[in-house]
Length: 324
Image (cartoon, rainbow, N blue to C red; front, side, top):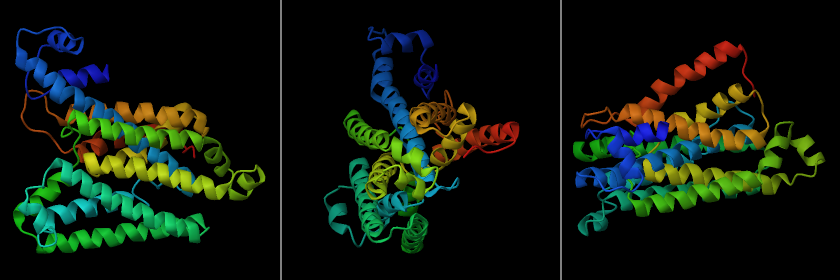
């Protein structure tokens, strides 16, 4: 229902029955409607599903790895690295003058720059994880990486002109409506690999809930498990941020929402559940953001908080305690 509602609503008014016909492959009297559905609305809806599910799963992985309910995809600085890559490309005109000269600034180059930024931060985190065995120390170092990248972005923002600053701010609002089918296939591959790595980590995630000492007594290879979890989070958070911009709320809130609904901490249930609930919540938020019959689209980053936060607060108040 959320998927059909998301595809049927938009700036151009298309009758619901015509939207369903277009999705089923039937020929429409108005050819432009079919083009809009298949080249804009369907890719946007599929992007919302991948972004919502992937960010929610990466948030679950981080909260369990660090045993911290406030952890999310941004704690390791991976998403901040993607933001830094985008900021350097958009605002670092002097550094990337060659790219400007050959006209490479665009959605694809922005995604490449963001991916490089997140990959470099992920590489540093993996090296640090090899040398430091304390998970909490790794969490603090990840937060420091986030602070450093945020500071660099602030310096770039101070010296850049208003046009470039506006372009970066627009990217930071987040959007699921800018991907082509080719980019969507790349994002699908990234999310698929991240989900596979997460599924392989389910036993380790359940063991970590009882503490690292208990996990070792069960024969869990913590070193290998940490690499798997960090790699999965890096792929999911970094890849999604590269294509859709920094969207923070989903990764933090959906794991809590899912635990309250299913009343469990078993990752055999939580992993598929956060994928589904993250996708549904993102579809609802994108439907609200696109303002039916209007050319304006609200920032998805703001809508996820406005729609999602009251739901999480209501569930926590109703349950009277947080399951973690």
